Image (tube, rainbow, N blue to C red; front, side, top):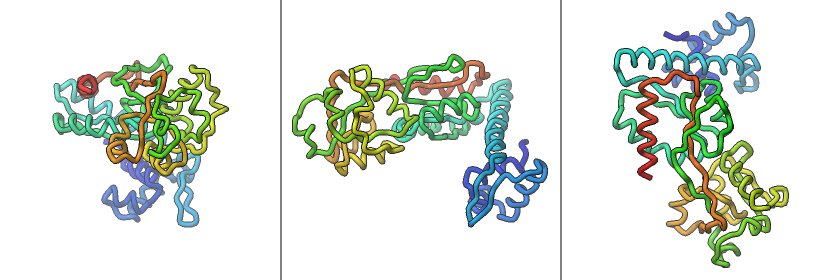
Length: 299
């Protein structure tokens, strides 16, 4: 139904490799190259730069990528809408999740949902909270699951789960030896391992510290990392302390490679579903939302 050349282009843009795109599409590399060249001829411009054995998108290629995501999203929405009219609960949904949720919450939720509805095709995109909100706004994904407040009147935000955040440190750290709750003011006295800018976790932590009278500029941020796993590894190595979701450290607590200490006052944040307010609701989306809310209520 969709333009074959655009699908091939999208695969090359995703992998930034003609060889990997050919493998994923079960095509020969010359066939992939031919399809992309045809698209470039239609647009009368290059979509990829090919230099020094490296493939990169040109500015035009980046713009075509944005529209390709929207086009295939609309195709998916059309297919879902037609199936809804026939009473068939099937189709495809593209879900986006911030890193913490994608790694620690969604695998079990989506696995259980897929077992109940094998006819529904689920796709998952992972980014930080800012990236997920942008993808919902641009119709690149149908549903986002994020870990920070979202202020956008065009989006519907529904809380699904409360998540506790705690201070973590290596077992021999000075804070652990004190054996008490950690005051916000204590945090600025130690090297701090932080998530990257745009992370929902980072946003929630900084706002908490500001509310408790701690100036973030006074913090000794020694590292900024893009995932909970990298953050935990840095703390285990004794590079600093951090604040992280309790749900992400079950294994480390069991192995005694990290110690969790509660904050005083405590800190929690909501995991939320985010979707477009005006977007047409289809049965498959309703089915997933209903299941996800029930799943979260059991936690």
